[in-house]
Every structure is written in structure tokens, then in C-alpha cells.
Image 1 (cartoon, rainbow, N blue to C red):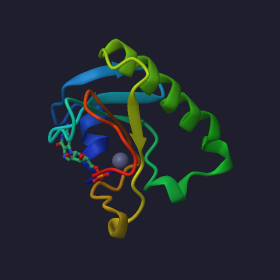
Image 2 (cartoon, helix red, strand yellow):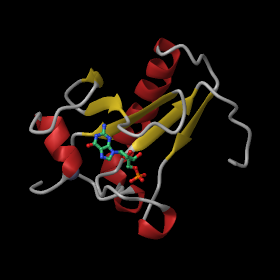
Image 3 (spheres, rainbow, N blue to C red):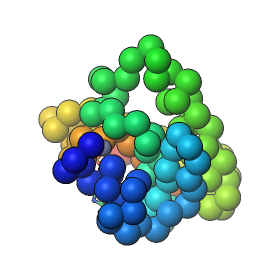
Image 4 (cartoon, rainbow, N blue to C red):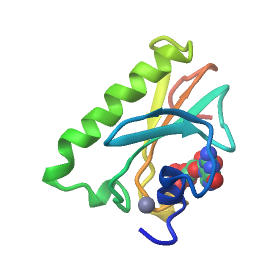
Length: 113
Ligand code: 5GP
Ligand code: ZN
């Protein structure tokens, strides 16, 4: 999609610190990390956000979770990580291409401080 920051990261127009890529998903470090480990998993398919996920996308979203957990282990946080999806500007979504945040490497008590 034109004028989408994360589509541009996927196609390489904007550089990123890439952690993983396959035919369906792309993972890269967040430019403004909120934890020692903070990266994003995005689908190559442009979806506006969690509320735009359709029945056809269910397998894709599950794959994002599986890859995210694998990468978290690879990044050394073991099984101590948080998964966040923001939906809508009112909830803090600032990039309107669905993305899964993985955060780890510090205290991950709930609710977040
Ligand atoms: P949101 O607030 O929409 O849930 O999350 C968007 C995330 O994208 C933010 O954590 C922000 O730091 C990150 N981000 C925004 N622009 C860029 C960029 O150009 N490169 C990278 N790697 N991350 C970005
Ligand atoms: Zn996009």
C-alpha cells in the first residue's frame, strides 16, 4: 500500500534492523524501544489493525505469534515477554499497518506501569 510506513519497511524503501522474514511475515526492532528487547512482527499483507483481521487472516495472526515467541527466545528473554497489539489512535496505535509488539528484558508485571 502506498504511503504506509511498514509496507515501505517490508519492501526495503525504508531501512530497518530486520530480525526475520519469510513469505508472510517480517520482524524488526522497534526504533524507539520501550524495553531492552522490543521488536515488531508484521504481516506482509496490509491490514489496518487488529479490528481489520478477517476470518481469512486467522492463520496468519497465529503465525505472527509463533514467530514472535521463537524470536523472543532467540533474543534471550526466554518465556518472559509481553505481546501487545494497539488498535485505534485512542489506544495508542500510531502506524496503521497491524503490528505485534514483543517486549522483554525487564520487569513485565501486569498492569504496566
Ligand atoms: P503503535 O504505537 O502504532 O502501536 O506502534 C508503532 C511502533 O512503531 C512504535 O513503537 C514506534 O516506535 C515504531 N516505529 C515507528 N516508526 C518506525 C520506524 O521507522 N522504524 C522502526 N523500526 N520502528 C518504528
Ligand atoms: Zn502497510
